[in-house]
Image (cartoon, rainbow, N blue to C red; front, side):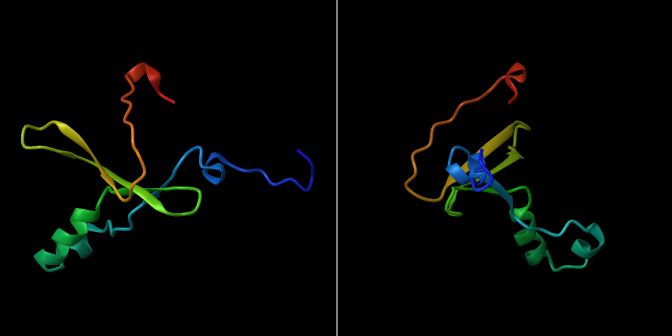
Length: 95
């Protein structure tokens, strides 16, 4: 790479989407003082992550929560017409 060439990360090239955590307060004391409707709205945002393409457009929102049976469910909300394929990796396939 020459001095004038700029490094392009996988985010810059579009190979990988960049994760952007939704902003939420984490202070239990201040949350306890809020009206229930505001707490519910904030809690609905907690743990959600947008994945943006190389242009900064959000393609998906992802979050994980427990269902009524106690199993963890991964939710993927598609935010546009971008095709999606899902691959589940086992414990020994991290990376």
